[in-house]
Figure (cartoon, rainbow, N blue to C red):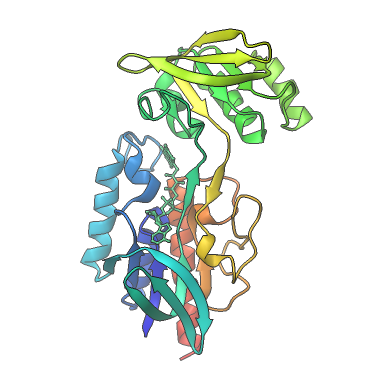
Length: 301
Ligand SMILES: Cc1cc2nc3c(=O)[nH]c(=O)nc-3n(C[C@H](O)[C@H](O)[C@H](O)COP(=O)(O)OP(=O)(O)OC[C@H]3O[C@@H](n4cnc5c(N)ncnc54)[C@H](O)[C@@H]3O)c2cc1C
């Protein structure tokens, strides 16, 4: 039986691995794809402290190498179920079962996509799912935010401060974000385009704008270098659902110590509810979760 299995090798899982290894545990990290998670898909990161310009692949490799250097073990496996068993947990993977006394679930989240032509083609070349991360690349340039909830409104407000003209486009006839945010959007000069559906993100080398249709079938075009899609995200928490409650987006509630209602099971990073989903907050969770797991292992020897 493993002392600690960490699910996911994003920044939360990798940091948990580093902290666990430094506590004297030799954790096993299970990852279905490659190290880094969402971070590995981010071409330019400008808000990781101490590294003003990082590319996500390099930062991911550095974190993985740091963990490996401390003795963290990695296996490429897809985990499909987690159950409680005597003295710990059983993890079902595509290559059989593993057991562990403690588990840190750091399985992250996936952004919801629009599924329109041009979205995938211009991802990272104008199309972004994270205004906090990428907004500053569009200084003085027109941007469109797609969505109508609080996150979309906050993205539009953030962009109004760092980019050029901002349009917030939503398919309903009224935004569903908080009333106070609507007032702030007006004050910030954000243009609202309501009752329109995205049909295409167009461009050449990079995104150049968005085409919409309105309820009467008319086509509307908005030129924009930045197209920010804020239509929600869902946590990768399917394998936790039998053990823990999740919110509508699949996120698990946990305190700053990352402990859950199940003794020995911790959640770290984007899979848990938090006010800000970023690399630094995921790393912070990873550190806290590993510390708690180490303390649990000491208490329950
Ligand atoms: C386009 C984009 C740009 C971003 N830019 C920035 C930025 O500039 N700065 C910043 O701070 N943040 C940025 N973020 C946010 C940041 O990347 C995330 O907040 C952070 O990666 C979350 O880390 P995590 O470890 O919790 O989860 P993730 O990074 O999502 O990693 C989770 C890992 O778990 C694995 N996994 C999931 N389920 C299973 C399973 N069942 N079995 C095995 N493995 C599994 C996944 O494959 C993945 O590798 C960006 C996000 C996106 C989408």
